[in-house]
Length: 263
Image (tube, rainbow, N blue to C red; front, side, top):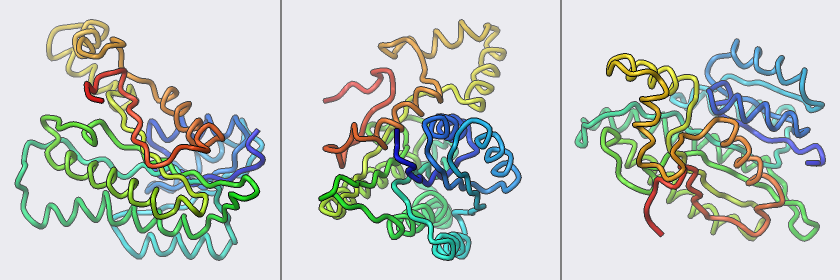
């Protein structure tokens, strides 16, 4: 049992976020849920109330706006929220082959997917009160993609941004370790979220194939011959939030079915 721990989850209403929140709620965690869409957050909180004993608070946050992040920080302070951990899912960057985008594009990407989320993480860390001497630790998990470990075609800007998160996580692991705050990253390969499944179905139709054929073709270079499921990601994240990671920090764990071929 998690002893009534409270975890912040960003991107809570996404395909992976919902699966993770359901998993954590079932395990007895209380959750602070953030995303942009307030109505989706309320709907999710209602679902979670029916499956777990914890409390589920929601707050709409737009990572692209500094004042929105600041409002969230004030909200946590006003309600005296103490966090035992955080799961950060920085906003995804759309695929692109443009490796030299305009400066304005870079500024927008860094604000939305790095600066805003990092300010929110800073606010979350300020609400953590670990006590490692007495076995109380705080766990941060940053969910990224495999372009954090290797360059992928069609993901030019993402290749840069995800590496930035990897470097920041490693830096934070060194800086916060003696306080009992752990920072690890989980880099995902193909994951069958509802959105990715719909995209795969469209590619299958365009190629005149059924879904199973297209899936087999796309996963032919994955040793496990499959893509991940959101529920599998949720299980991995829950492990990193638990005592399993009490002697682990600064790690980038590949959740890609063995796709990444490096030591």
